[in-house]
Length: 419
Image 1 (spheres, rainbow, N blue to C red):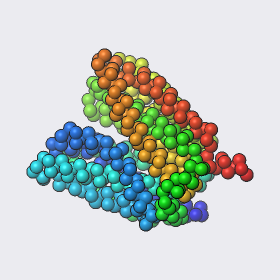
Image 2 (cartoon, one colour):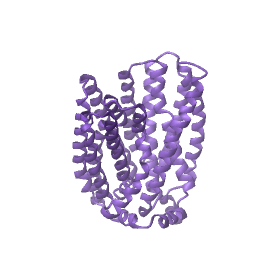
Image 3 (tube, one colour):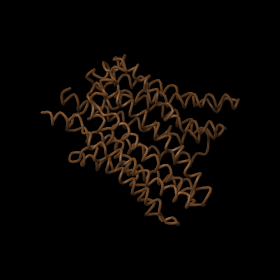
Image 4 (spheres, rainbow, N blue to C red):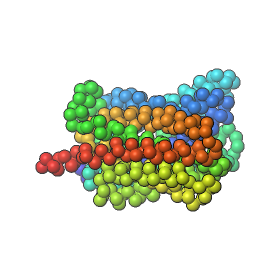
């Protein structure tokens, strides 16, 4: 793909990302959970909705089948088109008389929304790799993430205002319809993103034979633990920081949402900063630096003041957003550069599945277990102080796995050494 075609592809893909942030914000887990509460869903059903994104990751394999027929961009758009049509079933839920039927239809719509997300995003790393070169990849990925999070932040602010001003169930129905309409609109630039055809041909190859080829070139025992460690590090800090300020300091919901917006501001700032840093620093070095920063953030929460201090809390949430964006995009950049074009989809599949599983388990089993342990022994904010003291140590283990990326090297580095 020549430079002019790559730039055209990047512009179209950037528009897709910006528009796609709006339905993500309008249909994120918190909104769906609130909508489910309004519809009288039982607690186990609400818990299931909150975990559908992790549970549905195996449906990336369905996306591979779609890509084998449609290609990367059109395959992604096909999965998302079905996604944004099926999610409209949530609009009719309040009109259903039986609570059992309401629950079943709601769960079906939310699960389909999550499953088809997985079927689409399997193509993300492969397509990003095709439309970028080693020279501009880092700037493009970090810039895209900043744009996505900026749009997402504005959309989340709109949901906060809308749900506060209109205390009616129809506001959630309206958000579902707007999300579906904008989501379908976002697919117009996506289907027009040019590609080389390498991803489509790779999806047509037998999975296990391709995996054998990948294992000869890529040290998966380094890449996958590092990917999982990076995502788990974030998953063990950010959600529990919200719990700390809510349950430890006793602040209200709207103040907590303010800190969520600060977190998103940190993600945007990180993307802007990393666009400059990526020209001087390797992606694995950025990931290592930001996981190390998360260790410091966890330690700060472990010894945070017993009383609410706004500048301290605001700074920690902002820095957590900075770290999250740096880790996620740095890992994406590393994965794309580490693999040949025909391997990117399949290595992405393995990394995403393992990362989602470990991050989900660390948050639910390990995180929940620690809170239960300390909750039986201390009270108030001391529960979370104890939690974060343990987590700060555990993140050092995650940092160990992440820093192994530095010894692995990228495909570009190996080619340069061979030359």
